[in-house]
Amino acid sequence: MFYPIMLDIKNRDIVVIGGGKVGYRKATNFLNFEGKVKVISEHFFTKFYELENKYDKNIILIEDTYKKEYIKGSFLVVAATSSARINERISKDCDDEEILCNVVDSLENSNFICPSFINKGDLLLAISTMGKCPFLSKKIREDLEKRYSKIDEEYIILLGKVRNIILSKYNHKKDKLLKYCLELNKEELKDFYEELIKGENI
Ligand SMILES: C[C@@]1(CC(=O)O)C2=NC(=C\c3[nH]c(c(CCC(=O)O)c3CC(=O)O)Cc3[nH]c(c(CC(=O)O)c3CCC(=O)O)/C=C3\N/C(=C\2)[C@@H](CCC(=O)O)[C@]3(C)CC(=O)O)/[C@H]1CCC(=O)O
Ligand SMILES: NC(=O)c1ccc[n+]([C@@H]2O[C@H](COP(=O)([O-])OP(=O)(O)OC[C@H]3O[C@@H](n4cnc5c(N)ncnc54)[C@H](O)[C@@H]3O)[C@@H](O)[C@H]2O)c1
Image (tube, rainbow, N blue to C red; front, side):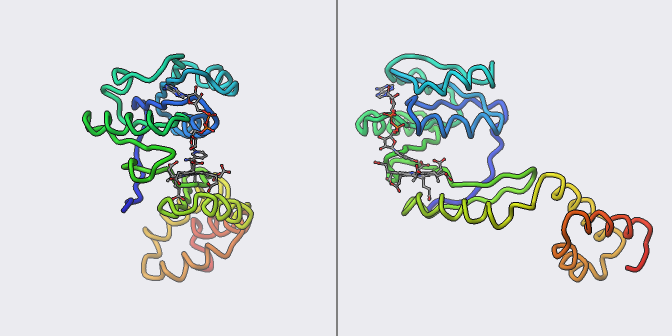
């Protein structure tokens, strides 16, 4: 069973082995969450070189065949080569070193998996099928993106501020007020925030 967890990967050493499209997707997500990513691969998908420009010191590309020394001391590993045999070996090496490992072609050899997700400011929605059908996770992600397209970073920050006022000043009717807030669009929520501050009509 895979337990959902939010992991702080800022400045943590993450090793991705395999520089193809799948390795690229995983590496990009780790970089966006401020991890330090080392990618080991015999060849690199061209878009990797754009990551070098964008993320500078947070990404290192090493053109080589996998060796165990590359994973030593790392926080997380992703085995994303096109060789099932090598991916399995990486998983065993990670077990020996007690490092968490995601193997992109084998659920059985993975002790963590990557969900599909939507991230807008401090809102994070993650979807997983426990590995049964990643394509369904992707489809649900796309549907949710359409459904919640109006939610953005500013809206979440504002909602956090409104909630703080409700909890501190109107705690006795917090359920009713929080429910009401979620019916408002961003502009209406801004007005409601002002009213809460002034203590009007609450
Ligand atoms: C969600 C997402 C996140 C991400 O990658 O970060 C993700 N896979 C995505 C896409 C995708 N993956 C595959 C296809 C082709 C269609 C198909 O086969 O279904 C597509 C669709 C596409 O690419 O369009 C093929 C595939 N995937 C896995 C295997 C191996 C196996 O099943 O054993 C194979 C067969 C490989 C082969 O050909 O041999 C395994 C895994 N893929 C997972 C995650 C984990 C379970 C997630 C869950 O619980 O749902 C898990 C277990 C491990 C992991 O990778 O962490 C990302 C969508 C991101 C987005 O766009 O939102
Ligand atoms: N989990 C997922 O989301 C998902 C999705 C699609 C495919 N897959 C699986 O992921 C695997 C990788 O897919 P891809 O499209 O990125 O493949 P790809 O062929 O584009 O890339 C694989 C990379 O691995 C490198 N490589 C191979 N052997 C190596 C070794 N011994 N040491 C270092 N590097 C090595 C190659 O140089 C290549 O750059 C596929 O085999 C497929 O089974 C997983």
